[in-house]
Length: 452
Image 1 (cartoon, rainbow, N blue to C red):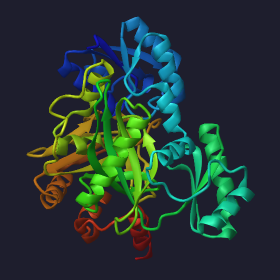
Image 2: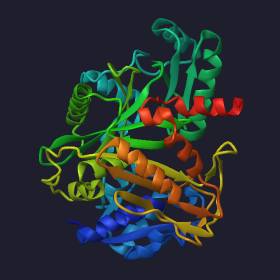
Image 3: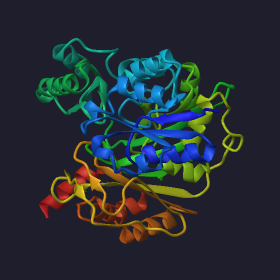
């Protein structure tokens, strides 16, 4: 087992990793920007190092400063969390060259699965269904239009280096294809320095279903069931649940087998997530992408499967096998997560940084709050707006929904705007209660509200 793990992240995930380290008897090192000096992860780590000013590009996205912090504090491993450098193959290579263990898969695997076009080809080669589309990257809008005509409109234009909803544009007809192609390519070029795009058939009324996978150096390849992440706005998830109210046992088995087959074929190690689109009647599924890191929504899987994924990541990276109690685990109950963001949901979800005057988190049976925030904390303007994750778990989906309603009503945050009121509307809506929603539900709901 490692002696010291440096946490190359901030916020709730950094705190989550620090707590896992402490329970494993491993010391932790926090890195932080000047804007995060008062963050809880800095206060609770065994050691801490300031690595720059507030903006990410001057701190959390600086590999040389993170490596330097690891070396001066004697860290023998780095956990990247999610976002920032978590899927940066070059950073994983730098860690290896400095004899520091990167807690995640190899740089080669990150590079393979991080490029959406290569990942799609890898899935196809291993019998994992993909949506009809171009055979790789298209040269330009003209070639893309030819492919779109062949597969039939509507289509989705995707940047091969895209992520977080960036570099993706739907084209419903020939008339709008070229402008949408150019928009997707320009956005990807600006965000990822790579404007290459490919074309996929657009699945109408799809559900976003992802499978949690684990693999170690001892021949263990497994999945831990699915999460339904269809409740999202502009490709950003708002509410997730495990298991999905849509997926049948037969479909779960098919998708799970495909997920395990894929990670075996690429020699995957550590935790990862395979993301799929599932059609409206849940008869077909299509590989979308793989995230070679821990996901924001991993707690719902932990609660239902009775495991701790961050600990498993650290164990696997240190050369130990997946814990015995995780192998062959069976799901129990139902878990729902609300991402609490510092945004004004009634003003186009405008970010709402500022000082929190009062913070009161809910509690009671089956309620978990993952956060780095407290009364008096100032939410900085430089980072993602998520300030907490509210997770509830119960014996059934019906009870979990009732518990989430109760927990949201208790959650008190004053001084800034949050998404809590909007999430209360969703949880109380008949469509959510019935489990009848897809990835377009939030957009359609907001349109209906605007028309009232």
